Amino acid sequence: MNATDCIQYNFHYRTDTPREYHPLFQFSTYTHTILLKFIALVGSQRYANSWNLHFDPVIYTLPRSIFYTRNYTNMATFQKVGKKWRAGVCVNRIRRTRTFHTKAQAETWAKQKEQELESGVLSGTKTLSDLLYKYKQTVSTRKKSHEREAKRIEALRRDPIGQVRLSEFAAPHVSEWKERRLKEVKTDSVRRDWVLLSHACNVAMKEWHWLKNNPFTEVQRPPESPPRTRRITADELERMLFASGFDYTKPGTLTATVGLVMLWAIETAMRAGEICALEWGHVHDRYVHIPKTKNGDARDIPLSRKAQGLLELAPGENTVFAINTSQLDSLFRKLKKRAIIDDLHFHDLRREALSRLAKVFSLMELAKISGHRDLRTLQDVYYAPKIDELADKLPCQYEVNDTDRRVINYRGALKKKRSGTND
Image (tube, rainbow, N blue to C red; front, side, top):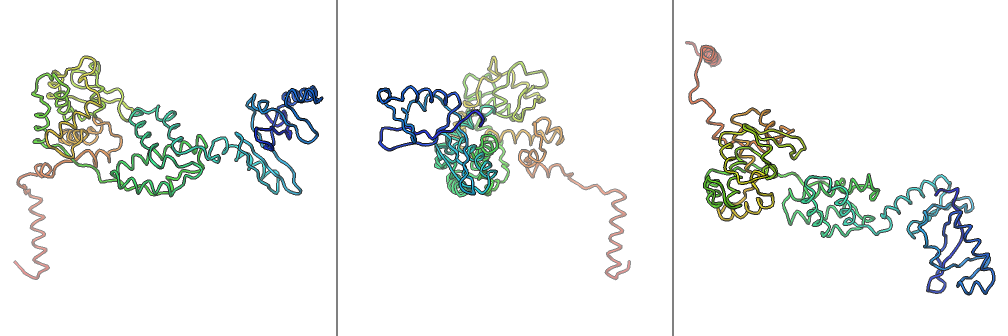
């Protein structure tokens, strides 16, 4: 419906409370014709009483149901008041008016207010929790990790920041949330939630028009923690395998399977999700193929002789190891407690594997195996060689050739000349 087929009338409907009127309703040309015919039919008081209708030259009072039989399009109105223009906007029974010097200013303001009222921002009805719920339903479902992200979103919706109205949401709310969360969890956890909330606000601002700006861009993000360098030691690996019950035979329990998976992760540098999703159809003689990885690209991983031997012990039929990520995470935590090991993550095995493979492959070859696009991440985060391993690469004795001798003799002669001594 546009302005050409919409006529405005000063109708009022009467509710149960006397003298309670709601002005300014808009009707299409079709509704206009029906109302005129209806008023003509009930011109006498006898028909008016039967329809509970009152008619006079100033106010038309009709039954409330007449105005809600159809959902009519909301439109802005403009009225000349002296030398100024008054703009009025009514969306979802919420009305806003303002006076301007020119009609062009009034039209610009009305268009902006219509969008804001339709989005629910200025009405004060939508909160950050509503924003996160829509983000979960429309954006998170397209991500591979949508199940894990959905849990984080629900936790954020229960947080006090989730109850903040979007019409009032500003940088101080973000700052308060950041300081409070830093006292409860680690910096990395706050940064992960920060990225999620900031992206949700960007989508709401650019695509949904629920926000005018993103308050997260006005607050400084918590600093990034130093890269993790934890590697599992030989003693810790032995204790974990003993606690799992894995004895280098085909495992009969899920707990023993975790021990087999740990050895496989150290040999191949595969992620936990990639290991659990590995199928026999992707296993070849000298390598395994991963069709879908974390960054979306497929990659092939060469197999050592030890990795080939571990495949012969794999218990799965469809998937190689017959274990999912939830079971692997839960059982790995239990094994840590049994082995009395602190601050060890399953992902640390990937760092251990890449540090071992770095002795064999170059940096570019290592990136091809690990699937890293950014070599700095591979170098700073995952490649963590021990200093004694680097020292072992140095030769035991330095062999001096003829060129080195000439350099040494020249430096000695130059030093004597400067000191004023002669041979």
